[in-house]
Amino acid sequence: MREVTVAATQMACTDVVEENVARAEALIREAAGKGANIVLIQELFEGLYFCQDELPEHFGRAHPLDGHPTIRRFQALADELDVVLPVSFFEKANNAHYNSLAMVDAGGAVLGLYRKTHIPQGSGYEEKFYFSPGDTGFRVWDTKFGRIGSGICWDQWFPESARSMALMGAEILFYPTAIGSELIDPEWDSCAHWQTVMCGHAGANLMPLVASNRIGTEAGKRDTSITFYGSSFIADWMGQKVAEADRSTETVLTATFDLDDIAARRASWGLFRDRRPEMYDTLLTLDGEL
Image 1 (tube, rainbow, N blue to C red):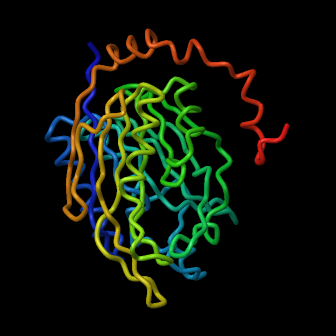
Image 2 (image 1 turned 30 degrees about the vertical axis):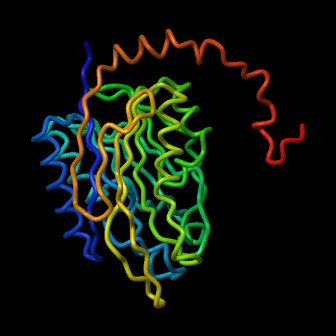
């Protein structure tokens, strides 16, 4: 048996970095106290979701990976608690800016960097103004507690992301997220759709999946607001939710999986044996025309 306990967390954010980082640290400590080996914090947790507006001042929130104060703090925390921490942050790389994730291993080493591949653009989610499309490709990392992959928010809507990480040997998928109400239609609630798509990734790739979303209502700078619907969850290798938060409560969820048992089931099920990549040329096109 190779048992791993994963944790999903959710919290409301303020516009004060230190408050958010301290709150995230408290949730990580709570998760570790419940036996978690890998703990996921939501997307861009250091502040409010600034992408509601297109304002140049928000580029000041970005920092390089090297010497990043929050990542250094979480490296020390990962070492102290012996946990793996995928850490979402707004990255400045010279004159480029990315929505990125640093994978911090138990012991505190930064194993590498992932830059968000799919960048959304919509009313209240103006990410193309701030972020260049990621150039790292999909990534997986050999951590102390298993080989894991992580997408970031909008990546979670693309089966290609999950499949790519699975083909690279991922054993668990992680998705830090910021998603809630839609400015163009306040009656539109994507929560069930959001969960269903990711549960499909878990089931189609026969591996657990962890998603962490934020909660609370956040005001933009131009008389807008988004209410984030939480509902963070953990799905098992069959795509069934085994732990789920509500829409408004700060929460730590945990679930334990035997990765060796799941690997045996994944192999015996035959999905990866029976793939036909030579037949998938249309996936390399935008319009399906070869």
